[in-house]
Image (tube, rainbow, N blue to C red):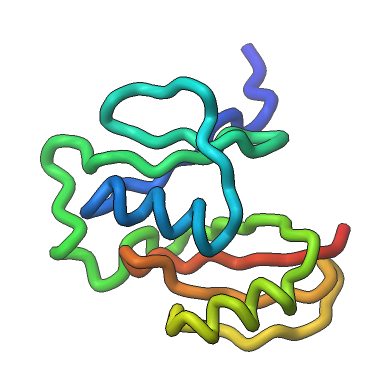
Length: 122
């Protein structure tokens, strides 16, 4: 048996509609045509991305920062422009834009406190 790589990514969130609206309105993601009732799946490529209600026993309020130790990177066509838009709407920026091997890169905190890195290069 061989694992070929990631095939689906989801964040457990406190308020499903609030989180989905953030990713739709602030990042421009589009909902997939279908998904389970406890999640919002976005039409992202090459890997589907979703926000979902917490699984039983998950207490997001007990975590210092949800997802600590996990790196979630999203590709954008204009990382600097997205940074500027997020900053203007009060989204916390965890690391300022910088140029590196993956193009322009920055990290923000989503409404649940997940650190999400955005880049616009290879």
